[in-house]
Amino acid sequence: MGRPDGVKVRDLPTYRQMMPFFLRTKQEALITWGSDVNADPGLEFAERMSEEYGIKVTYFHLVLHSIFKSFYAFPEVNRFTKGGRIWQRNGIWFSFSVKKEMSTKGSISIMKREFKPDFTLLDTIKVARQDITRARKKDHKDEGEKEAAGYLWFPAFLIKIGYPFYKFMDEYGLFTRKYMEREVMYASAFIANVGSIGLSPPYHHLYEVGTINQFVVMGKISPKPVVENGEVVVRNVCPMTVSIDERATDGYYYYKALEYFRDQMEYPEKLLEPAERIDK
Image (tube, rainbow, N blue to C red):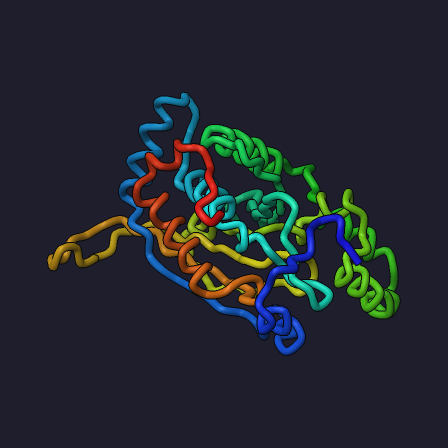
């Protein structure tokens, strides 16, 4: 059986074909990575780009574009596991959360966006600004909110009875392409910027529903002592964590993609270059 959101990967080693059967859930296959990224070059670059583009460029915009370029450069990280098989996703899609107001009562809206192969840094900045502005409108309801509101019309016992049917549809890709394209849980990665509310990044779990294979969390940028060339210096660093379903591809491949991401962030002029395939 095929799926509207991906193509079955057939040229896999035997052990990787078997992994979905003995690592049956994302939580069983979960690995995490955390590191501090030198933020000084990116902060300076964002300030320069703000003057050049005439719009506010934030560090989050750079992170978003760097993640996109990493997914394009190393396409195996854009795979997911469903129905005992590994699939190559059609397109690069990101879901990200936006807090409507900076208060304890402020709700969170989730936006989803496809990133086309020809996206430039300016394209990423423009669509991110548009999505964030729309998400923060008081009357805006994202697709997840609308869907949940529909389910909550039913009594709790009916929701519990119906959930296994929903999970079966999810597992075997029986939803329509249109549904999967608008549903926020069907994406390449979920990206959260908790630094915007002054927090350190947690190691986030992966959702069993949907096909999100990676959860990326960006924390608060702050000064920190680091060792450079044998000397201790103070740099602004951005702590980041990534939670990954390892069934998609091997750890060394993920490592190369993560190092590519770091290189883009610490030498941000590279973000102006077109996205290109590194793994061909």
